Length: 516
Image (cartoon, rainbow, N blue to C red; front, side, top):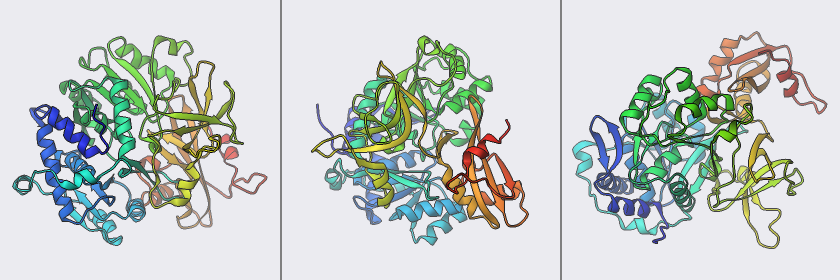
């Protein structure tokens, strides 16, 4: 067995083994084989270095899931630059905060960018380049660069931004070594081979896309990138997945629930599908049973869990009939992956007994490097294991409260802070509150998450104002700083917000007063 110490070499080895096999499949005879993708990545790696990109630099990518976009991610890995996929539809204020946080040496796009996006880059003095295409791309040298061999497992592979409680998104840094460990686990856990075709319904700037990209292209399987407009159409999405012969699916539960609600899912609709993976939020058992009845026994259904800070996934539980002995609630998280260590700790940092509730803390090679350019929040989340004795060991505090049963299974209970999962996105309610407090005339603000039905919830904002304001004006004002999935579904304007005994806004009282 050859040990790979950087992702560029790992992809080269896969490409050399399967040069003629399809790496990217788009349908209608449009595909790109591994040999072509590797040569394109080499060309773009040289193109990046010619623009001053070096090992450990950050490069921002606006990627529309094109062949050049995926080759660009590989090119960054080959030269040891950390890529960060950016969302062009982010409000300018939020995109600006992300760019200010990571300060890329260069921003690259595979398409023309909107004027407001270009202005964001200009305001933080980040140069923007458009990827070469056609003959200009083909004319670039396709030979590998010597710099590939200088990259090590400790170099950062990518940055992934998540919601931040201070109002500024956090840039999680994941190393080459962490991703290589993840690839090995995913390949074994899901039995991924060169015969597989993995879906890519997840946006490339979203954590779940880590599984799509790395579990496929670094295992010799094909990746089927599905653009935003296809994912937005239930009928088109289901049809395209079937036409491409996809064998492994990964998405948030809410997308699968939506496809079921729109009556697009039925037995035999995806004849090649052997594994349906879902994660990023809870899947209520009542809805999950409907999916189970569609796919069982032909395909394996797997509930996965994992924070962005620990390379996407750290547990995988295969759903069986026994999971529906109790029909309410959420399925178990299962047991942690064997390449993870973990602790479930009480508030005073002591191990808890089976049946008790504590915070899940993760250890091992998939734990990330921290938050980029943010030592304070890194020190809060990535801490020393308090039980490690004389030998220091770093762990990540997930903030997730779990219960471990007598069989070693973990069950999600809640959060120790104001973080929520909504539409598959991890959201800090404090980031919404910071945006609310920045609006004119708002003197106090709070945000809560209201569970309406077992599978559905909404964000509700409460504001007190020094002048008359309306719900619509508050929502419109938030569009300048928050993406659509963070805009509250309801805004209540009150004379003042209730306080608890400590003088802080009483979110529990606000939530208790809501009607369904």
